[in-house]
Each structure stands twice: as C-alpha cells, then as structure tokens.
Image 1 (tube, rainbow, N blue to C red):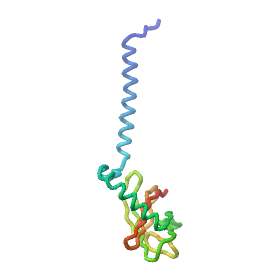
Image 2: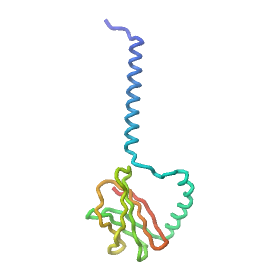
Image 3: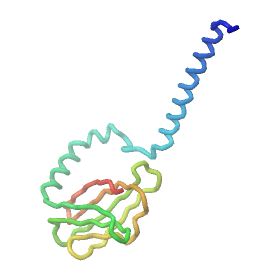
Image 4: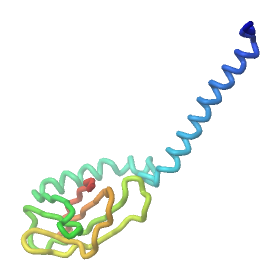
Length: 148
C-alpha cells in the first residue's frame, strides 16, 4: 500500500529544489569572480571625464593614415606590419591576457626589413590582447587587437 503524499514530502521537495538552485548559484558566482582577472579602469567616473579627449586623440590618429596588422610570426615572435608610416617610427606593444591570468608584458619592437616590426622575445602561447603604439615625435597611432 502506498503512503499518501503529505506536507513533509512537499517540504522535502521544496527544500531540495531550492537547495540545488542556491548551490548552483554559489558555484557559478565563485567561478565568475575567480576567473575575472582585473579591473578595466581604476575609476569609471574619471574615465568618463576623459572619454571625449580619447575620441579626439583617436580621430587625430586616424587622420595620420597609418595602418598596422598584428600577427604571430613563423618563429613565434610578435610581428607588426605597417603601411603609411614615416621613417623613424617606434613601436611598443603592451600585451595582456583577456582574463588577466598573467602579468602584462610591455615590449619595444625592433624594426625589420620593409615596414615590419618584430619582438625579440617569443610570444607565449594562448590568447592575448595587444595594444600597439606607433609613435613618431608627438604623433601617435594606437590600436588594440586580439591575437589568438
């Protein structure tokens, strides 16, 4: 003979169901907090005050007519191919993991034949965000591209 479904059974179902939901939420929250590696900006209010200045600087950089392509060279180094840049341009690459799991790198790239720049160091495996700064005197061209 079957026992009737009672209030204690319903209490067990509710407690068990909500317990599973709470456990999954805590797990997902801990994974999200543990995988976020850092801060995008230190102070978002101050960053918002500089936004129009950054837009103006980006517009000036676009008017230079410089372009750059970022890639991993055949021997594993960081390679930048440029077009429209004058002689004497310097290239600096700031590299960071998208999730900030390792320390950022800052490399001054060496000029190579043609309009190319190469790093001395081999680029570690994995995904990187590369912020490239091409500079000639007071003029600067900045781009940020993912590299996988």
